[in-house]
Amino acid sequence: MSDRRRFIVASLLTLVSSLVGPPAAATQNRPSNTSRNTPGPAEADSGTAHRSILVVGDSLSAEYGLPAGTGWVTHIDRHLEQHGTGYQIHNASISGDTTSGGVSRLPGELDRSRPDIVIIELGANDALRGLSLDMARDNLAQMIEMSQQHGARVLLIGMQIPPNYGKRYADQFAALFPELATRYDTGLVPFMLDGFATDPDMFLDDGIHPNEAAQALIAETVWSLLVSMLDVQ
Image (tube, rainbow, N blue to C red; front, top):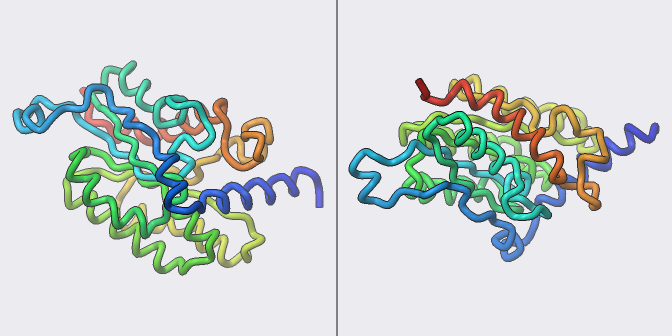
């Protein structure tokens, strides 16, 4: 096996497997709310509240191993501000989360942030635990449906796993995201780590999580799909 192929397999394998963590550790890796001046209930009821974006993800979105305020979600927040979009972003990502966890906590997050757009970045932990892909598909579908029922548009972020888990399983997992995006007419980022997944310089010393430099690349990948969903004049 070539060094490049060995790195690809090892990086992707350890990346997603490390996303699985005990609940106690997961809550410690939840990022602070990145919203700028989150409006209170009175402001929201008056119709003067900013439009909002909710991010529900795992450690790839929760600034795992990074200084606070350096993750890709913060980069998106800066884009939103620099372009004068009027959107604020709320990061509700938790390291170690699965699609089942996302389904459980999404209703509360929807009620709290009242988002116009929901970015869903979940599923890798399900696959690396060898959980049923049908269950992961159903959970993601429920999250999309709940978001749309709340009047929010959805941007689904896709992930991939190495063929070590079986080519058929890996292919079926990768196909979940475009399948759901087509069924529910959502936005889609096909692969979150597109453009640097094989570059060891873009990962932390653990060889698992994207480092600070990689966050800007992730943000550009997400932004290229998100910008067309923004309701700006």
